Length: 117
Image 1 (cartoon, rainbow, N blue to C red):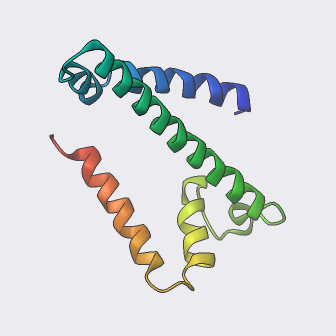
Image 2 (image 1 turned 90 degrees about the vertical axis):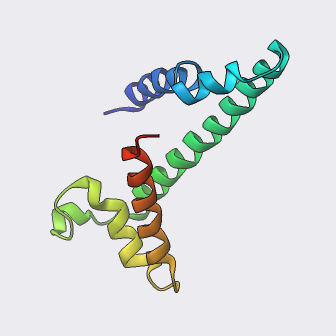
């Protein structure tokens, strides 16, 4: 993958999330006026952009952190999907409660994804 393919894929995802996601459309339709719907759309797009920027920044920081050693080549992890949990286990476990908070966030996100609502 390269930066351009990521940006193009992110643009398509961002457009879908901003205009066609069921929860977003319901939020727009619940607005009393067109101006309120536009304001809601702008605010939602700004928050989504902040989210994407923070996730991208986190990815860049993890790549920078492991620039001198590759955990996959050393056998510490088997797949690249395990890089973030490996980082949390190796470097952030010294902070009390952070590992549990990370696991709670992952479980919460998984539960939200599979929730029927």
